[in-house]
Length: 253
Picture (cartoon, rainbow, N blue to C red):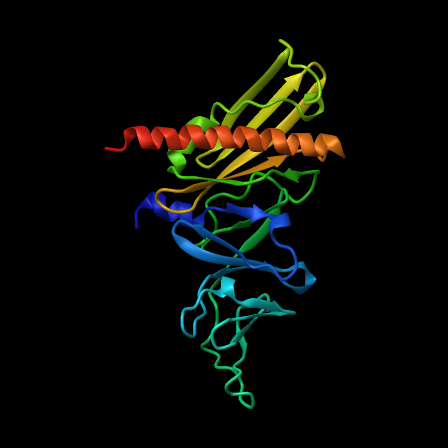
């Protein structure tokens, strides 16, 4: 493993938004080629697990959440919220579950309305640039068939309008600046007169050829303003995806 790969495994990455984890839903995603199952148990605990049952390797995302446990769909083995330890083997109801059966789990943080994890156990290379305080609105995420470095080039030119100005005509006094805060994160600020909106954009390297974009608006618009802001960024993300994937196709032999 190279030094850069080791740093990436110790880095916190956004996986999804809090809205992606309703009750009884197991969210499926990949990070750096590792399949993950993400779900929220009782007490608000978020679990990020390897997406394989340690018994026979069936994907846990085809299983079901049963209260404080996740049940594998194949033989019904159940694994405990918060620890991943096997709690029950249906074929052996009178015996304790083997201690050796435990789903590998990863550290979890909730920050800025997003769910974050890292794949390596040592101290992280860097923490998320957002904390758990403040008002945040997660934007609709998007998958792009392109490498993170290529997506980053397009995100460096990300431009949007302030949320409070979306119902008004565009004017010459509008501006937007985007700066890269690290290899996988960007901060973008849009202004129009006294109106200002701030957005953080994060890249999730799914695998060697796919990148997910996660965004956070640093405000909570109400009513129609919220719908307009979400729609505005969804359209911009879509155009950015199309530009990235068009570039990949143009370079293909």
